[in-house]
Amino acid sequence: MGWYAGLGFSRKIQWAMGVVTISMLFLALIPMGYVAYSSFKTNLENIAQEKARILARISAAGVVFDQAGSVNELLTSLETDPDLESAVVFKAQLDGSEMPFAFYDRKNRTLEQAAEQPERMGWQDDVYRHMEPIVLDGELIGELHITLSASRLMSFIYTGAGFLVLVLVLGIMTTLFITQKMRAYLAKPLNDLSHAAQRVALEKNYSQRVVIDTRDELGELGASFNQMLSELEAYDHYRMEKETEIIQLNAMLEEKVLERTRQLEKSFEDLKMAQNQMVEQEKMASLGGLVAGVAHEINTPIGISITAASHLDEGIRNLAKSFKEGKLTKSLFSEFMEMLGESNSIIQTNLHRAAELVKSFKLVAVDQSNEQARLFDLQEYLQNVYMSLGPKLKKTRHQVMLNVPEHMTLFCDPGIFSQIMTNLVMNSLIHGFKGIDAGEIHIDVHDKGDEIEFIYRDNGRGLDPSVADRIFEPFVTTTRGQGGSGLGTHIVYNLVTQALKGKIRCDSSPGQGVVFSISFPRNAVSIPNAT
Image (tube, rainbow, N blue to C red; front, side, top):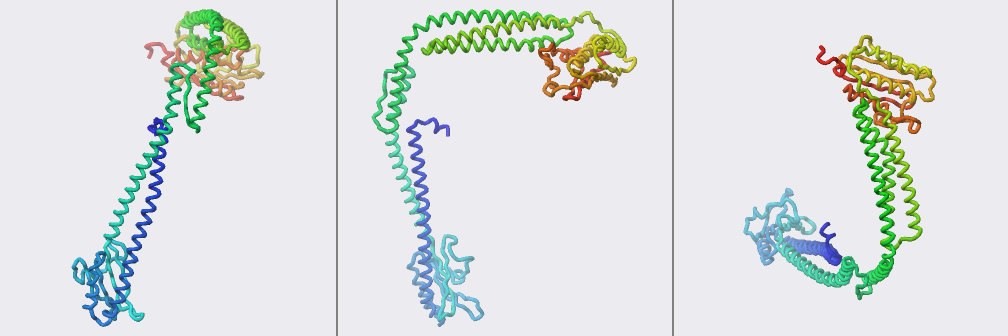
C-alpha cells in the first residue's frame, strides 16, 4: 500500500469511494443475478414437468390399447416446441420390465437410441431430463421420458451477464464522475492550505493568510492555521526586538566557553602525555598488560570529566538557544552559571584524580629487564619463593602447601613463576582469607609430558560469579578504595599467556574458595635444541 500512502488527500478519498462503491455493486449484483438464474431455471423445470404430466395423461389410452402409431403422432406434434429434444414412452410388461413403445426425437435417432436410459434425471450435459409415470385407474402402465434443451437457460445467462456488466460499467462511470466532483471540492481548500504552509516555511513570512470559504472542518482548519500565523508573527516581532540585547551576552558566553574548552583540551593533552609515558615504561616491564589497565582505570575520572564537559556543552547550547529564541531569563542564566561552576569543579577534581592515578601506577611496574633465562629446579625455586613470603605468612595462621615433583628442571626466566606465585598468594591473603583465621593454600604441579599443569587453590571466601567472569581483566578487584589495584590476576594472565604461551582458568563460587588452573607447553620452558 505504499503507492496509496503517496497519494494526495483528495485522491485517497476518490480511490476509497470508488473501491467502496464498486464493491457494493458487486455485492448487490451477484446475489441478484444468482437469484434470477435460479428462478428462471426452476421455471424451466416446472414447465418441463407440466408438459410431461399432460403427455402422460393423453398417451395413457394409446399405451393400454397398444396404439403405438397414435402415441407416435401425439409425440411428433411436439416438434413445434423448440425446447423439446426427445420424448420416449415405455410400456410396462407383466414381468415388471419396461419396453420402448413410442418416441419422438428431434435429432432423428432410432427408437433404440432414443430409449437409452440416462444415468440420472435432472440437468446433465446441457439438457434437462425428466421421467413422468403413466398411470391409468391408479395402475402404473408405463413411463414417459422427456429431454429439454438448455438453450433458453444459456440465452438467459448470456443476457443476464450482459445486463450485469452494463449495470457495473454504468455504476463505475457514475462513481468516477461523483468522486471526481468530490475530489475537486476537497482539493481546492487543501491545496490552498498546503501552498500557504509551503510559502511560510520557505519565505518565513508570517503576515500572509489562507482563505477557505467552507464552514466544515476544512474551514476550521484554515482558521486555526491563520491563528497560528498570527501568533508566529507576533513572536517573530518580539524575537527581533530582543535579538540585539542577547548578541552581546552571547559573545561573552562564547568567549568563556572557548577559554574553558582550551583549558580542558590542555588538561587532556597533559593526561595523554602522562599515559604515553606509562606505556613506554610498560614496554620495558614484564607486566605487558599494565598499559591497558592504566587506560581502563583512568577511564573513570576522564569519563566523568568528559561527561561534565558534555553537560557543560549542552548547557551552553541550551543557553544559546534560549538566547536566540528570546527566552533567556535571569533564572536560566543563574542556573547556567551554577552549572558552569559545578562542571568546572568536577572536571578539575577528576583530572587531578587521573593525574594521581598515573603517578601511582608508575610504581606498579617491576623492572625485570636484567632477568635472564636459565636452567633451574622448579621445586627448589618455589620453596625459595615461599620462604620470601614468610614475613607475610608469619603474621597469620594461614598455610601454604607445595606439591611439586622432585628434580623438575625448567629453562626460562624464573621470575615468571615468582610473580605468578606471589600475586596469587597475596590475592588469597588480602581478598580470599578476609574474615578467615586459618586458611589453606595448595599449589600442585603435574608433569604431563608435552604439557605442565600448575593448580593453585585456596579455601577462602570465593568469588561472586560477576567478578569471577572478569577476574583477569585489569583493575578488577573486590577491595576498590581499600588499596586493591586489581592488577594481580591481570599480571598473572599476561605472564601465563605471553611468557609461557599457556592457558589459565578460574573456577570459583561464593564460600567455596578459588581454583586457578594453569597449563603451558613444555617446549616453552625447555632448553632450545635440547633433545
